[in-house]
Image (tube, rainbow, N blue to C red; front, side):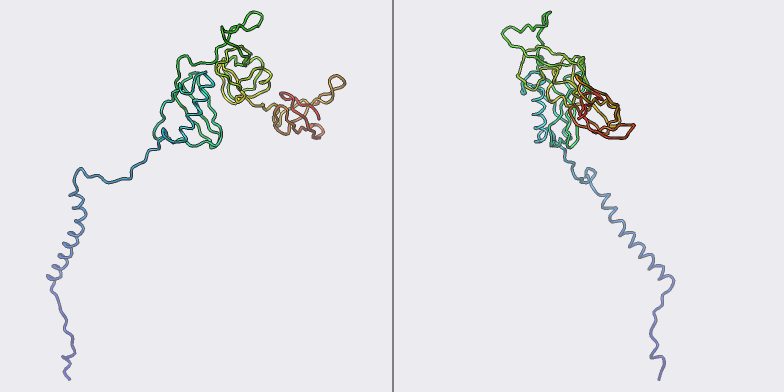
Amino acid sequence: MNSGMFNPSVKTSTPAQGLMQILCLTVFWLFALSLPLQAQTNRPANAQTSTPPIAPLSAAGSAEAEAMNMQVRQWMAQTHGVTPKEVVIAPLDSRLKVQGCQKTLNIDHPFASKETLRVRCPEPVWQLYLQVSMPQGGNLPAVVSSSANGGATPTPGGSTKTMVVAKRLLQRGSILQPDMLEEVQASPGNADTQILSTLKDAQFAELTRDIGAGQPLRVSDIRRAVMVKQGQTVMLSIGNKSDFQITIRMEAMQDGRLGEQVKLKNPESGRQVSGVVTGLNTAKGL
């Protein structure tokens, strides 16, 4: 048989042809890669990429903000003797979101100016500062002048009411002492049954907010103060003053407010007893 019949035909190429193929492929890929760049270059100059808009957090129209403003107006009305409608609250930043408060808001004047209010929420914890305004006549109830013998001189055609007011600026957390407060006769203005009428109501009490000079104290402004603190020395009285009474130096094992029962320890013997808090670092045996 002829062996030439089984030899496959092989195509060969010259170096010039191989170089031409490589050049063609290179031109093709350069053209393909330039298409996105050209498309981007041909984009109009005023065209902008679209980005998701940032939605503003509006506070003015939210239900939470309206509820807060209502409480602020009521507080201003009770504190300064104006009507809630007369209190003007400056709008909040539109980007600010007012959260709902699960408990009663704590409102006070943190500074001497009446135009700044601090609103604090105990749960969840947050606070805001508001700018408010009210009529020029808005103020604390007018204090009635007292005569030399201590009697009150009522205003013409009006009745008077005994109020407990601060003699000076008192800060939150202060333990009230008799020299910090005074009883005055004042025109009731708007009847506020929460205002303290006797110094006894504020004895050994702790302020829950700042109180300005001349400002009346309300039930919500005070709470029973911590008179005994853990680790401090407490004088424990046992017995009756009229018969027989001894006083022992003890160590407080826990904090205690006025009238509360606390655990006390004798530092020498280590024995623990219970006592009732009667004053600052004092207690009475059971």
